Image 1 (cartoon, rainbow, N blue to C red):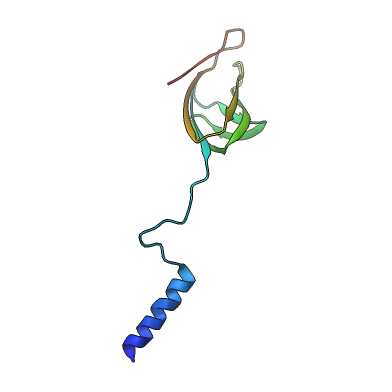
Image 2: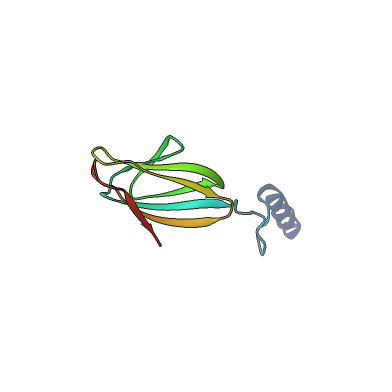
Length: 108
């Protein structure tokens, strides 16, 4: 009787919590990961007008189109259109220029 009770309990637990042995039923949604560093650090990062983080930052966004802005008082705002339809990691080094200087960025 004890063995039967243990089997019933095991079946109940499997029904409640599912069984993840050997297979994974979860799928990872496609995403765009931005790894943003800035010079100088501590710049604010906006995506499509919404504040997300301060550099250095890692942002995970869904697939699609976004306007990325990196800004810091006393420096020109860096802007870049991000448009991706596949999972990708984009490392970015953004060098903010003081007001009156040109902007530049580098990516690997």
